Image (tube, rainbow, N blue to C red):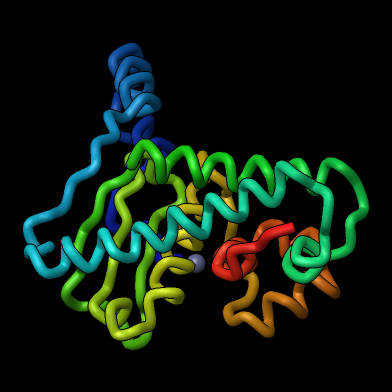
Length: 207
Ligand SMILES: [Zn+2]
């Protein structure tokens, strides 16, 4: 899911607030921001029950991602790849899918994200992130935990894939059938669609 980032400052509006003489500290500031300290944490709204539920869905997401990445590194069968990322047209496309899942796997393995437990999300919103947030703060909504665990795990893969420094995916379509149709008709968009990553992994593909 995506949500506009209207309530947080972006680096582009900073120069309007300072004189040219103070540009050096801003440069320093941007350097610091480019290497955020990522350490797994929950915000205070994540009670013990929500934390337990999170670790369960995390294990599903990690399992899905391991299957997906292993599948893509073997490259000796491709029907599942074709279903979610379209016809094999070039090694560059396969390499992009592989790199995306390597980045997702690395961020899962090293837990390079934090969790905030939202209490009031729009109806049917299960989770959201800001793609340019280099601290990887993932917003999880109560509705997520009403879904089955396969959906929860796939959602976490979906959200991680959104980050610009992970796979930079967007939401072109939602839903499994729509993701498959996107792969058939617009394979390049499928490679840039978060749902296609989530559903590709959810099936625990094997060769
Ligand atoms: Zn999304």
